[in-house]
Image (cartoon, rainbow, N blue to C red; front, side, top):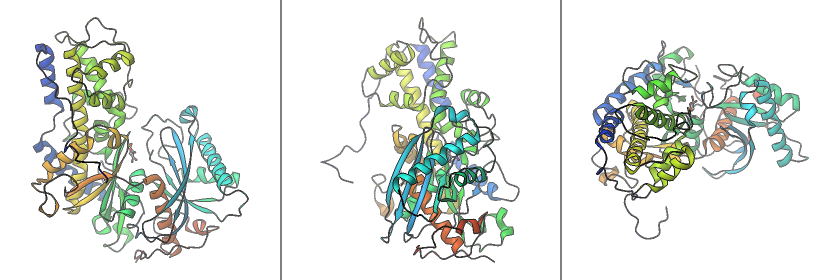
Length: 503
Ligand code: BGC
């Protein structure tokens, strides 16, 4: 990293002062601190339970955390080659990428186009969605390969919506096999593409990151939703024992860890978390995710403020019109992140945001409470997120590791990274960094770092690895191996990856 001159060790932030805050608000601040603070002992207890729940998800009887085998078997070597497509459906855009993996180890070239997802499509029918996606892919191919006679291009599709949890509600997709209708839409239009791998965003992140950094052991998304993937040995996966695979063979597991503690045994849920769950489209599901992910942070904040306003003994927003604040999901994580980024001692920016967005004119003490509340919610999110990372590291016995992370909360939420690193330090009892160096500044034994492009490069790599494996005759977990080879270019992959042993 290039720096210009000496840099401050820590980002400067305002000091704030709780002087001059009326007693009722001060008391509420204290109550909220008790409610939202997760101390070291609790973090450690959560991690221990997390480890046993990860194992349970891999067992025959199963548990809350699904621990889905992805059939992406092993890390890339860096020597994969060829041209692959990647398709990624985010909340607002559809992104199509063509990735070329050249001879040079760990390198890639990428071209991409984005297509806006029309709003009405998000609540339309499944057929409409697949038709729209197929049209976009057709456009992409026609634009970038005009007049060329093409072999079928292998496509990795990042699709992280096994449950519609992010503002989508399309009948006939949830819990259904999305491959046949998608392939049918491609077929109908004669688009020369073969869907080679359906990928979760975390697995893409894991594979893309490990392609450029062999220390990357876990892929995480901390965004609208939250989840992780890591490489597990078959010896640790009793629910796949019947497949009699070499116990030393590795396979990427998409944890779907948002479901951790759905039975409410360990997470310090507040009354506000209970409301979020109760009023959500899927009550009882994604307990961990609902305390952490971007989708819920603004709503948690809003619920607390509405509750305080309704308490007769707390004087907050008196005489103000709180109609806008009362609207569910009216505040998103970026609102909270703006509050936390306000650099001014008098919280002028927060004052202005509340005024313009919510029509509320806050007093100075109210602003102090608002700022503290945002810090508490943001900090809890980062500290609980670290529990999942620590659990995987402990389960796998990783004393050192890089963790590739992506998502809006990780990339944009102020202090999320530093708070996560602090929690890891507490959980894993570090007193010094790698090689005896002081902690921080790249020396933490386990570091959560910005990931490589998972849904582009990662998806392409997984398509490459999958195709290679099928070409070598290892068709485990592949639904239509013959279809996969039909019409796709014979391997020009020089990957040195050894095919997994099958018995
Ligand atoms: C989904 C996961 C996804 C995560 C991050 C969660 O809501 O269930 O599949 O990996 O969000 O996008």
